[in-house]
Image (tube, rainbow over all chains, first blue to last red; front, side):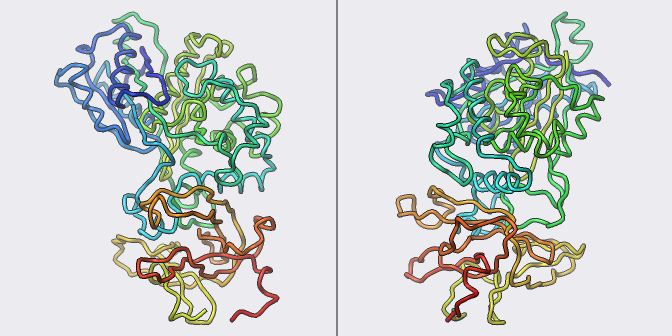
Length: 379
Length: 149
């Protein structure tokens, strides 16, 4: 069993562009190859994910028709993490020494618009206006606030931090700071979440080059070790997206399961994590995921966020590039953007948003219908 | 309301035979209650039809303030839109069900944990100009002081 390393990371700026999703994906792939100092013909396998921008293996003519296995991964918002798991397993098992993981997307404007039948749900669920991810996030945080004393001000602070960090991240979409008061006063979209508390679907691409231990030695490059990658789906009793009903008896969420498995795999505890990129579909998700990933107890977020512990200068900076709130959400790319940001932070190449000397970095991406992917990296 | 005039958006979501409105849930062989009836259930044993209690407690809620895209939302994107309330209600049978919240309720008084009962509300008119109803919830206190016709 080989250790697995990331030797290159590339990104195509997130936002709204004139180029296609595929073009943005190819740009990210080329950036990752250049970062690793390798050429495409050296790549032995690839995994790629996109929700709306076509088949990722359509990148092959632009990258090079070398006949390698290129598998397309479709796992909702957890696509990036799922593609990483595939590449990780390939190297770990010795089936390959050098691979590419690619994610890109280009979404239409407005809220995600899913068809109930695609998710095993009856037509009436969509006809009656219940088939919206925004409602899920709003109701999840609404209940959480009631149970654990989280205030609207905390939701606003999370979004404020996101836009501040985004202003320092060249690949982010929203790069203008917005203060907490303006966030609170902005138009209510789905109570209790206002417009600036929600991410928007956007465009972008991100890519990673993964290598085995012997390939790292052979190439003599700087490498970030992948200590864990996990993907988990939902069990009975968790509240996930697109749920006409759920068990009253609560069980662990997909995120809690993926996090626990990742910490066990890496042999580290949450306290040891120096920087974390966690799913912030809306600011309430960042708050809840802090606890689900094991970084604090339920309700502790109120104090941690108020005291600035999750800011760039805090004890455990969270979403250092502004997350989905500042970068938008191109589904196929977001999970890999998180890892790109972690690699950048670990290598101390994050410029003005650099976190102080991080050694262990964590990512968690989550999506419908209850899939979570976690990674832990170290340098 | 008259059962003959209430056109529900889909059959067997609610049962009004007993004079009130009860949600129809389904019990799997492993004892779990599900709602609605699974579309492509491959279980060898038929599911048991279970009427949920007439009331439960509010588990969470929100307001849909922008028009969902059509499809799948009924009508077309250019239709007029009124924000609607929705939420989840927890029933004593151990299942939490999602649905609309009756628009006539005083939403400032919505509190997680409050008693809600089940009703049906019109949510759109179809191509034959008939009203189509969906199951919904309303706070118990909001209507128990007057009689319903």
